[in-house]
Image (spheres, rainbow, N blue to C red):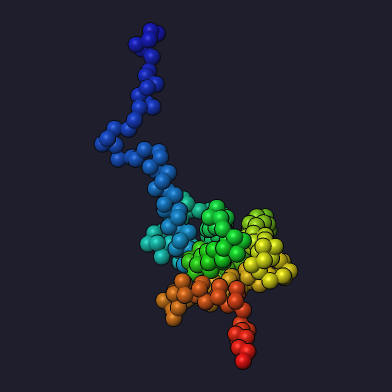
Length: 226
């Protein structure tokens, strides 16, 4: 067989014709990821509204206006959906904390920024899902992964509290206990916050930070001497 008789390999790898109904692989991958993200977003909203156990795959499909079998092209089961939602909430927090670190400033500046980021994220769908559903709903293997990521957030708060005490901007305290108080108070926002309620996320974050950083005791100015 001479060279001209050999089937051309170039034709198979050539770019798709402009009139082809199939998009190129990269575009297909982007479309698939966008649809998977839509599944996670709809699921997070429903988990927040109804709870994990009370939400079915049929509910998620109905929210998206697709059939239940369509979901299986993007996710394996409900736990995988929950895991994806929780991971996104955690990653948003980790990214925000890293941005505050890169922004520099004093330990108090960074701690304040971290607290603002945390308070804002727990009022968003994925952040609320992380707080309201919790990692106890996933399998033991996945639970360990999520707890490791959560621990990284807690250690970041501890680090900043420790540095704040060292630089003199924070009163002497137990960094571990203080980090627990800060994380617990800010996390609880995700349980009681209701979109469209009396306070905006920005107002909630501002008031919570003011209370956590300033305390609740009244500090009267010293009496002037006569």
